[in-house]
Every structure is written in structure tokens, then in C-alpha cells.
Length: 412
Image (cartoon, rainbow, N blue to C red; front, side, top):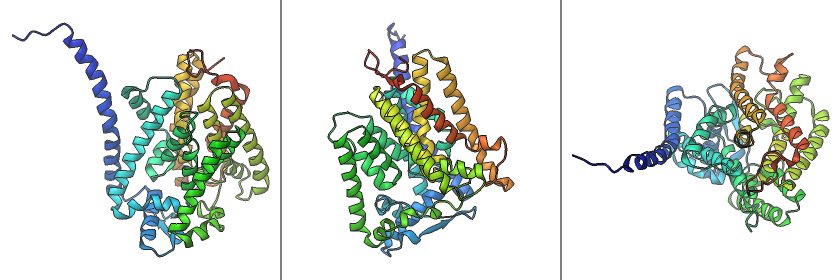
């Protein structure tokens, strides 16, 4: 006969409550990576951006000096070219030494790991628990939203950049290395440079200096490694938006520029877009600074990121992965404050971000560039959400005031 102590059952239950979520969290990236490899081998489609990264890495490894002549034509007939600084190609070099399927598997696995890390950082910023169960639940919940699903489907870098920026800008305030992540992220893709302006407006001179020094270091490494390509890129190639998209009206371009082009049904909206973008940038940075002054670092970062997405000439749907920390904060803080409106708003936003996957069906009817009536609301969803979010934060800048218990609050 086996005699069990009275505490054996509960202790076992507690252990299972920790081990099972942790095991599932570890298995999730592996399962997604395996599924990605199976889908690619079965269809030969998707992961177009990753294919461009790999083609650039192969070209650079060959030493032919033609990094920006590299193109990749997918099964859909769309031709893509490499548009990032040479430093990015340097970091992508490992892709040159693995086959396509292996590259997709590794990239997908790393992307889901980065997503889970973003969810954990967001939970921490919201003052919630960061156990394996909470991180697993949050990660699974955001996998279906179109920015995340689209990011995984094309093989983008956005999740990695967002993680670097979040850890850098919401970490230890007195760190001597604060800003370095901003500089490195900007060296990979130029859009994070808006966070340098953010740091300057906050009068965080040291962090801004570290960011600029880090960015300059990436440029210097690029010149030392690929001088010809560096001259071509920094000599004007970075302004060639035609290499990014042929027409800003495409529904997947969720920037202010794209929204104005869709509203006017013309690709030439520069005369209108430039002044509106400048005003949006100024207003958005002011909102971000006010959030930080009110005691909420993470809302300041999110406001700055949203501003960058709006004013960039091209912001693809997968660039809006910044919705992940926003959704986590909205739901967690809303529940803790007993704010049902915030929780419902979070649920509606999640539903909208998931439903926006329907944009992939727009091209099937041959009307990716021309929209009328209610379609203009649906096809500009992310832009509208961005402006509403900045407007809400402008009206309630004290929403992130630090609570008396040391955690960041939601309402005054």
C-alpha cells in the first residue's frame, strides 16, 4: 500500500501549474517554425521579405558589390529588392549559409520568441504578472492579429526591432547604455530614428547621444564592410521609395501617405501629405513627451512608435506589430482599474486587427488601388486607430501616472 501525504496532491498541482505552461511556451515557437517549413515546402509561396534578405546576404557573401541590384520575384509575380542599410545585410549573413527551408524555420522560431518577449515586457510595463502562463496566453492571443500573422508570413524584422526598442527605452532609467538599442535598430532600418527626436525632446541628452553614436557606428561598419554599396545607399538610394512600393494607394500601406492617396484616389499626394505629416509628427511627439512627463514611459514609447508609423511614407500592415504591447496594456490596465470601456475597446481592437486580414482578399477582385464609400473606412483602419489613440492620449496625458504602489496606473 502506498501512503500519500496530505500535501502531495496540492504540491503536485502547483508544480503542474508551473511546468505545463512553461513547456507549452517553449514548444510554441518550435510548432510555429515547423508549420512554416511545411507550408513553404507545400506551396512554395510566402516569406517574400525573408527571401530578399537571404538573396542580399548571398550577394554580399559573394563580394560582387551589387547589394542593391538584388531582387526576388515571388510566386505572385511581385518583384522585391533589398532596401535596408548595408549594416542590416551584415547581420543577415548567416542566411547565406543555410537553405531556404532552414532559414524560414530559424527565422520563424526566433520571431515567435521575440513576440513572447514583447508580451512579457508589455505585461511587466502594465504591472501584471509575467509568469509562463500569462506570457503564453498573451502570445497565443496576438498570433492571429494581422500585423503579427502578416509579419510571420513574409518573414519581417519588425518584431526584433520592437523588442530592442522596448527593452532599451523602458528599461533601467539610469543605464549608461540607454539609447544604444535605438541606434542599432535605426542602423538596421531607418524608421527608428524618430526615437532619437523623442529622446531629444525629453532632454535626455546622454541617451540621444548614445543612440546617435550607436547609429553612426552601424554606418561606419557598413562602409568598412561594403564601401561601394554604402556610397550607393547613403548617396541617395535610401530616398528611392519606388523600391518599396510602386503605388502608395495599396491597402497594405497603412500610413498617412497611403490613406491620403486612397482618399484622393491618386498616387501623387505629396503636396498635401508633407505639411500634414509634419503637423502629425510634431503633435505625436508632444503627446509622447507628455505621457512620459505624466509618469508612463511605455505609453510615451507607444505614442512615438504610432507617430512614426503614421508619418512614414510607407507603413506596411506588418509594421503595425506595435499593436501588441498596446493591446496588452489596454486590456490588463483596464481590468485592474475596473474600466470596462477599456477592456471592451481592447476586445474591439483585437477583433479589428484580426478582421483586417480580409485585406489580402481585396486584390482578388482587382481593386487593390481604388476604393469608394465605406471601403475608405475599412481600408484605412490602422491609420484611424493611430489617430484616435494619439487623440485619446492627448486628452488624458495623466492616464499613465505612476500609482502609489509603484506600478503604473491607468486613470487618475
